Length: 103
Image 1 (cartoon, rainbow, N blue to C red):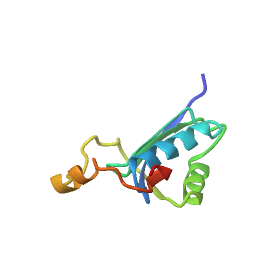
Image 2: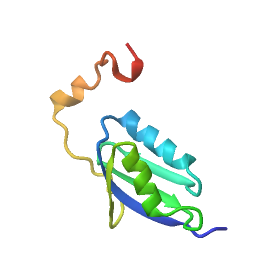
Image 3: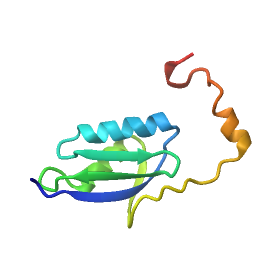
Image 4: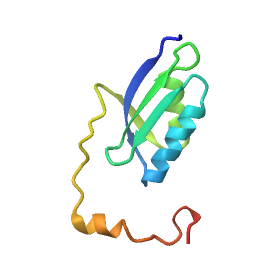
């Protein structure tokens, strides 16, 4: 079984949860990355990769080419999300015309 490395990173530029899912899916398609998750609410992600197939610098460049700013961080991803005012929470339940081609 290959040895893997796990990196936690901060990510700036995500505009929605769907984008975070898309980024995680795109990372998992890259060679040597069996696991990747991006969390929109806390602007952080984790990636597990085989250092014999890829490296953090390649992953970082791939994310930057997609228009995101990323920074490797220390520690684990925290599950505590930043507080969201109730008015914003309720407005997110309403459909937004034109987002992701769903009108």
